[in-house]
Amino acid sequence: MRRQLSTWEFDICEMAFGAYLAARAQGTDIVAIPVFPMRGFFHTNFAYHVHSSINSPADLANKRVGIPEYIQSAAVWARGILQHDFGMDPYQVQWYAERGGADSTGAVLGFQPPKGIAIQQTPGGKALVPMLSAHELDAALVGRIPQSSTGDGPESNVRPMFRDVIVEGKRFFDQHGYIPANHTYIIRGDVLHKHSWIGANLYRAFQEAKALVQKSLPENIPSGLVFGAEYLARTREMFGEDPFPYGVARNRAMLEKVIQFSQEQGLISERPTIEQLFAAGND
Image 1 (tube, rainbow, N blue to C red):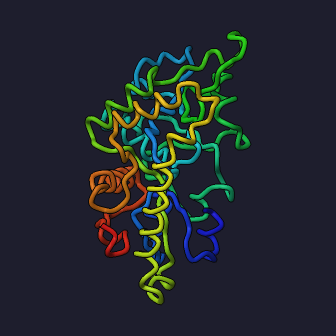
Image 2 (image 1 turned 90 degrees about the horizontal axis):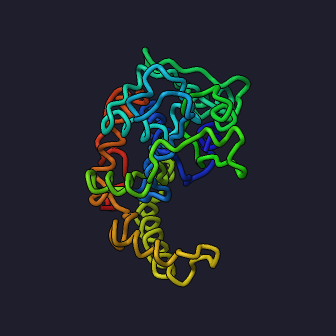
């Protein structure tokens, strides 16, 4: 994605919401199609060190909290949800970003965090999990909650912010009605202007591909997932037959929210309309 943001050499590219919104706000001629390949309850990926006096997300105030990068879409969702659903104030947190300099999306976009946000890069770009395990951070947004195989290593002092991520995910879905998406697909404006049919055709192709995958899921559960069929049934019971809908209409509430969070967190100064962000005819 950083390569695309630097050169714009690809006609079509998967892109994170944060980068897409920031690039468009700078005047880049790109348009998205309402296809969302990545979703999750990203705030449940927060973990904390047991000696950090953290009992809830609100306790992150005045703590050292690691994130992969400020502009990262998963971090945007996680901060916004912890702020609005759990009372965390992002302006009272000392943030540490793992990615910085030329390796960061923010650097490619020339992005600067808003005034009042305290953020610095981890020393030498040190990874978040080792820092959290060593209590050099109090909490961090990580892709996998570390676990010690022996129960007595440094990772044994790391705990998930939400002990039962399924319960928390269901709470969020029941309250808000969607699973947050952090990526979409964008088309360069010059390509779409020249070939106006591309947006609708791509959207239809992604819809058909998703239908094929959903149909084949029950027959393709890895044998190593002993209760895979049960978890698939439970997932569909919680979220319906299609928990990953495409299109603008079925995702409007989610899209309004990620735009809101992006403005609140300083990625953009003004909120675009959803119609400005997505190619027409993909409702």
